[in-house]
Amino acid sequence: MILHKVKVYPSKVNLPKKKQLAWKIAEVASDNAKLNMKSIEMAINRIIDNASVAIASLNRKPVISAREMAIKHARKKGATIFGINTKFKFDCEWAAWSNGTAVRELDFHDTFLAADYSHPGDNIPSLIAVAEQKGRSGLDLLRGIITAYEIQVNLVKGICLHKHKIDHIAHLGPSVAAGIGSMLKLNTETIYQSIQQALHTTISTRQSRKGEISSWKAYAPAHAGKLAIEAVDRAMRGEGAPSPIYEGEDSIIARILDGKKALYKIPLPKKKEQKKAILETYTKEYSAEYQAQALIDIAKKLNKKIKDLNQIKNIDIYTSHHTHYVIGTGSNDPQKMDPNASRETLDHSIMYIFAVALEDGKWHHIKSYTKSRANRKSTIKIWRSIKTHEDKKWTKKYHDSNPKNKSFGAKVIVTLKNKKKISESLDKADAHPFGNRPFKRVDYINKFLTLTRNIISLKESNRFLNFVEKLKKIKSGQLHKINIVVSNSKLKRNNKKGIF
Image (cartoon, rainbow, N blue to C red; front, side, top):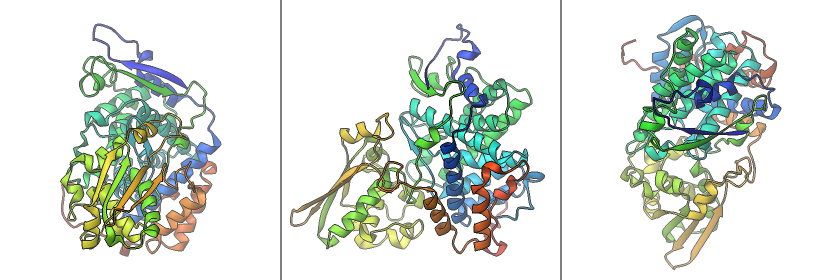
């Protein structure tokens, strides 16, 4: 890997194109390095993972609305939309919009956390849609996905968006553009321009994840993917972009991030170096914010240790800066303590999540979020007894550069009414690649089978799994078979009229 230093230059300094971060990213994308076999297998795992959560969310309101918008954009040789008969095709950018929303809605797919936060699986719907429309092969698609992960992971390692309250999709636009460029074998110049356009058009604030969190949280990555596809299309037609997008005097860094004195360090692969960043990412066993994964595991263990939950006086959670300030009491969001808050808010409230998991000794992607579940008196009592605290030891472990040492866990101390204290600690979620029982292909398949049960037929389930596991051998023009079809009778519609 090469560590690239990125800083702002005044306009009077004509920074050469080849010294700009967007160009260096484009060089990685256009470099036809040999694909790493473990990266290929992990990309297949993540396609299965995305399909699991997308099918499970098909009849949720934001997904229905996104699908209704997309189906108004039919195209004879376009891309498929999850749930809809594969013989029907749609403009790839709208298929990416619909499928991306379905993947993101349940907050149940993969994650990568470092200087910033991300869900790298958000890259996949856009890449699949473009690959279908452009008639690419399975290996082309895998190359694009592996590149997209490489770029997003390394941007997340080097540039923090969150401290400036910029949403993490600002790293997704460039990674989707780079992945598409790699998949379509575009030249470095075209990819460079599309990366700059994609970044410029995908800057938004984190209000989408603050306060009363709305359905936009599900739409945001799909929107970034759609904009990135359009950016690549324009660049392929010879159009340029604001430049240099990272280093310019009025650039993203200068005006939105750390400012004109900023210095960022971004790791990127050397020429011909295999791309392995996807292997550093991790999926979710439970449908909640990633920092909640280990805490759900802790709650399940405490459920077995505490005989009478009515005897709980208070619960203190000692954890990282991020967990405390984003999903803990340090966020100062009253909505995170509100039983009538939206699902999108509750899955970003570690107090709610821990209370439910402690009571139930398990977690369910739908049942754990119902209004009746959130309003249970015993749950509210535990919920409001929980307080989170930043512990610098956990913050340090959170930011460890060694993936094996990086920690997203916590220490929990439960104080009973008789003053007895019961504690439990866990560095990583059990399903983490370096956890107690890391997710493997069989676990991804089981997650798929569990989430799609009673939604798709066994025949369709087997067909999809057989196809995707052979993806690297799939020839050009066959990728529409990656779609999953659901019976029309099981797909809800939204009859409200829009513009389209």
